[in-house]
Length: 178
Image (cartoon, rainbow, N blue to C red; front, side):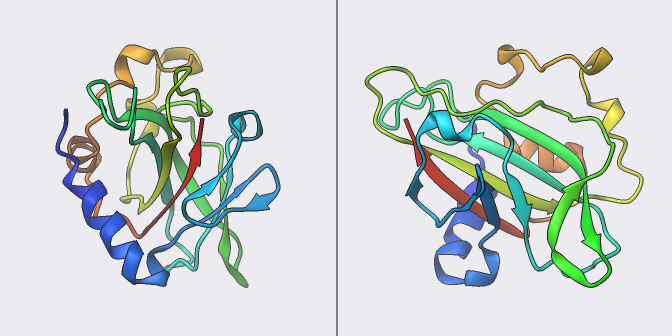
Protein backbone atom coordinates (compact mmCIF):
# COMPACT_ATOMS: atom_id res chain seq x y z
CA UNK A 1 0.00 0.00 0.00
CA UNK A 2 1.38 3.46 -0.87
CA UNK A 3 2.67 5.54 2.05
CA UNK A 4 0.76 8.69 1.06
CA UNK A 5 2.58 10.86 3.58
CA UNK A 6 0.93 13.96 2.09
CA UNK A 7 -2.49 12.56 3.05
CA UNK A 8 -1.40 12.05 6.65
CA UNK A 9 0.15 15.53 6.88
CA UNK A 10 -2.87 17.47 5.62
CA UNK A 11 -5.44 15.39 7.52
CA UNK A 12 -3.46 16.00 10.71
CA UNK A 13 -3.16 19.73 9.97
CA UNK A 14 -6.91 20.05 9.28
CA UNK A 15 -7.73 18.52 12.68
CA UNK A 16 -6.12 21.45 14.49
CA UNK A 17 -6.36 24.29 11.93
CA UNK A 18 -9.80 25.23 10.56
CA UNK A 19 -8.14 27.20 7.75
CA UNK A 20 -7.08 23.83 6.27
CA UNK A 21 -10.68 22.58 5.94
CA UNK A 22 -11.93 22.61 2.36
CA UNK A 23 -15.49 23.58 1.57
CA UNK A 24 -17.22 20.63 -0.08
CA UNK A 25 -20.88 20.79 -1.10
CA UNK A 26 -22.49 17.47 -1.97
CA UNK A 27 -25.89 17.45 -3.64
CA UNK A 28 -26.50 21.05 -2.57
CA UNK A 29 -25.47 20.53 1.07
CA UNK A 30 -22.24 21.83 2.60
CA UNK A 31 -20.61 18.97 4.48
CA UNK A 32 -18.82 18.91 7.78
CA UNK A 33 -15.77 16.69 8.21
CA UNK A 34 -16.73 13.09 8.98
CA UNK A 35 -20.38 13.67 8.02
CA UNK A 36 -22.15 10.60 6.66
CA UNK A 37 -23.49 11.01 3.11
CA UNK A 38 -25.50 8.16 1.53
CA UNK A 39 -23.67 7.00 -1.58
CA UNK A 40 -26.73 7.68 -3.76
CA UNK A 41 -26.44 11.37 -2.86
CA UNK A 42 -22.77 11.67 -3.84
CA UNK A 43 -22.68 10.31 -7.39
CA UNK A 44 -22.01 13.73 -8.96
CA UNK A 45 -18.87 15.77 -8.47
CA UNK A 46 -19.19 18.14 -5.50
CA UNK A 47 -18.88 21.90 -5.51
CA UNK A 48 -15.64 23.20 -4.00
CA UNK A 49 -15.02 26.36 -2.00
CA UNK A 50 -12.03 27.75 -0.15
CA UNK A 51 -10.63 31.14 0.81
CA UNK A 52 -7.76 30.88 -1.67
CA UNK A 53 -4.53 32.77 -1.04
CA UNK A 54 -4.22 33.93 -4.66
CA UNK A 55 -7.36 34.79 -6.61
CA UNK A 56 -5.46 34.79 -9.90
CA UNK A 57 -4.06 31.27 -9.41
CA UNK A 58 -5.51 28.03 -10.72
CA UNK A 59 -6.25 25.09 -8.44
CA UNK A 60 -6.61 21.32 -8.69
CA UNK A 61 -8.81 18.92 -6.73
CA UNK A 62 -7.89 15.30 -6.06
CA UNK A 63 -10.34 12.90 -4.39
CA UNK A 64 -9.48 9.55 -2.83
CA UNK A 65 -11.30 6.74 -1.06
CA UNK A 66 -8.86 6.28 1.81
CA UNK A 67 -10.37 3.01 3.07
CA UNK A 68 -10.73 0.72 0.06
CA UNK A 69 -11.74 -2.04 -0.07
CA UNK A 70 -12.36 -2.18 3.72
CA UNK A 71 -11.11 0.22 6.41
CA UNK A 72 -9.42 -2.68 8.23
CA UNK A 73 -8.00 -4.21 5.02
CA UNK A 74 -6.77 -1.50 2.67
CA UNK A 75 -4.83 -3.67 0.23
CA UNK A 76 -6.33 -1.99 -2.86
CA UNK A 77 -6.44 1.50 -1.45
CA UNK A 78 -6.50 4.25 -1.62
CA UNK A 79 -8.67 4.43 -4.72
CA UNK A 80 -8.55 7.53 -6.88
CA UNK A 81 -11.99 9.08 -7.37
CA UNK A 82 -11.18 12.35 -9.15
CA UNK A 83 -8.45 14.62 -10.45
CA UNK A 84 -9.80 17.86 -11.86
CA UNK A 85 -7.41 20.67 -12.75
CA UNK A 86 -8.45 24.18 -13.74
CA UNK A 87 -10.40 25.46 -10.74
CA UNK A 88 -10.53 29.25 -10.50
CA UNK A 89 -12.35 31.74 -8.31
CA UNK A 90 -15.66 32.60 -9.89
CA UNK A 91 -15.16 36.38 -9.65
CA UNK A 92 -12.62 38.93 -8.49
CA UNK A 93 -14.75 39.68 -5.42
CA UNK A 94 -15.32 36.05 -4.39
CA UNK A 95 -12.21 34.18 -3.29
CA UNK A 96 -14.12 31.19 -1.95
CA UNK A 97 -16.22 29.70 -4.76
CA UNK A 98 -14.05 27.63 -7.09
CA UNK A 99 -15.33 26.48 -10.46
CA UNK A 100 -13.50 24.34 -12.99
CA UNK A 101 -12.71 25.88 -16.35
CA UNK A 102 -12.68 23.90 -19.57
CA UNK A 103 -9.58 21.83 -18.74
CA UNK A 104 -10.12 18.10 -19.22
CA UNK A 105 -10.19 15.89 -16.16
CA UNK A 106 -7.15 13.77 -15.43
CA UNK A 107 -9.42 11.26 -13.70
CA UNK A 108 -13.18 11.54 -14.12
CA UNK A 109 -15.26 11.74 -10.94
CA UNK A 110 -16.67 8.48 -9.63
CA UNK A 111 -18.96 8.46 -6.63
CA UNK A 112 -18.72 6.31 -3.52
CA UNK A 113 -19.09 2.57 -4.07
CA UNK A 114 -17.80 0.59 -1.08
CA UNK A 115 -18.36 -3.16 -1.28
CA UNK A 116 -21.43 -4.63 0.43
CA UNK A 117 -20.90 -5.16 4.14
CA UNK A 118 -18.12 -2.60 4.42
CA UNK A 119 -18.24 -0.01 7.18
CA UNK A 120 -18.27 3.62 5.93
CA UNK A 121 -15.26 4.77 3.93
CA UNK A 122 -13.59 8.20 4.07
CA UNK A 123 -13.92 10.08 0.77
CA UNK A 124 -11.31 12.84 0.94
CA UNK A 125 -10.95 15.92 -1.28
CA UNK A 126 -7.58 17.66 -1.48
CA UNK A 127 -7.03 21.16 -2.88
CA UNK A 128 -3.68 22.03 -4.48
CA UNK A 129 -2.49 25.16 -6.18
CA UNK A 130 -1.93 24.14 -9.78
CA UNK A 131 1.55 24.94 -11.11
CA UNK A 132 1.81 27.44 -13.94
CA UNK A 133 2.13 25.66 -17.23
CA UNK A 134 0.47 22.47 -15.97
CA UNK A 135 -0.90 20.62 -18.99
CA UNK A 136 -3.78 18.39 -17.92
CA UNK A 137 -4.08 17.01 -21.45
CA UNK A 138 -0.70 15.33 -20.94
CA UNK A 139 -2.22 13.20 -18.18
CA UNK A 140 -5.86 12.92 -19.31
CA UNK A 141 -7.16 9.71 -20.87
CA UNK A 142 -7.26 9.85 -24.68
CA UNK A 143 -10.47 11.19 -26.15
CA UNK A 144 -11.89 12.20 -22.76
CA UNK A 145 -12.60 8.58 -21.90
CA UNK A 146 -13.08 7.60 -18.24
CA UNK A 147 -9.96 6.52 -16.39
CA UNK A 148 -9.89 2.75 -15.93
CA UNK A 149 -10.18 1.20 -12.48
CA UNK A 150 -6.74 -0.35 -12.92
CA UNK A 151 -5.16 3.14 -12.77
CA UNK A 152 -7.24 4.11 -9.73
CA UNK A 153 -6.28 1.34 -7.29
CA UNK A 154 -3.44 1.76 -4.79
CA UNK A 155 -3.21 5.41 -5.82
CA UNK A 156 -0.04 7.11 -4.67
CA UNK A 157 -0.76 10.79 -4.03
CA UNK A 158 2.89 11.37 -3.03
CA UNK A 159 3.96 10.28 -6.53
CA UNK A 160 1.30 12.45 -8.22
CA UNK A 161 2.38 15.42 -6.11
CA UNK A 162 5.95 15.02 -7.40
CA UNK A 163 5.03 14.21 -11.00
CA UNK A 164 2.64 17.15 -11.34
CA UNK A 165 5.03 19.42 -9.39
CA UNK A 166 2.40 20.26 -6.79
CA UNK A 167 3.15 21.92 -3.48
CA UNK A 168 1.54 20.85 -0.24
CA UNK A 169 -2.26 20.66 -0.25
CA UNK A 170 -3.89 23.88 0.85
CA UNK A 171 -6.90 22.17 2.37
CA UNK A 172 -8.79 18.89 2.76
CA UNK A 173 -12.20 17.65 3.79
CA UNK A 174 -13.88 14.28 3.77
CA UNK A 175 -17.20 12.61 4.24
CA UNK A 176 -18.12 9.07 5.18
CA UNK A 177 -20.22 6.86 2.94
CA UNK A 178 -21.26 3.26 2.39
